[in-house]
Image 1 (cartoon, rainbow, N blue to C red):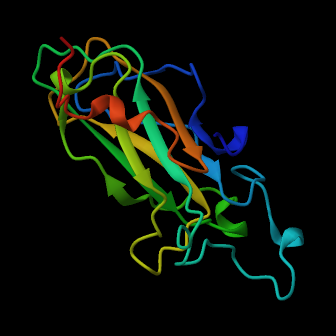
Image 2 (tube, rainbow, N blue to C red):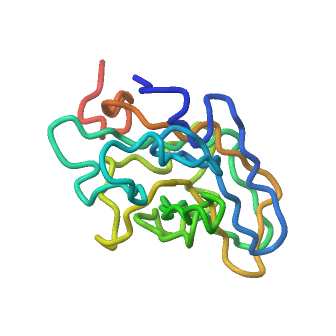
Length: 184
């Protein structure tokens, strides 16, 4: 189940292209945890003493943790032995002086290098529970996914079909299980 259309890094059938120059990292859309969008002053939306907003360390802790799922659209093709590293990143709000834009991006979690052979059409490459920000003093307002390739390598084909935040893990997980029986 999708929680909200504004909580999609790549909407369903968004097909974010992974074809770029050698070593170029491709960012997804940015999710503003306040919901107002990049560049918007949230000060009149904070109750009490106005301080710079940042998600607490406890984000993603509890019984109903959101899930993140990222699926390949067009399978990856490379002639340069490129690998894909999908990274969940958070950034603090720069505040009034910085135009309420994302500050320095910090990687919270990543898949590690995935080869083109591991990323055919329709493959989920990232399925994980929502993680608390790290380091603990990060306090992000903005989140994004970054799809990185090593320097000097690139993909000649490949897309991300969707990257969604869901309330539960709703994929058909057993379809990847070992088949321990035969039908005669």
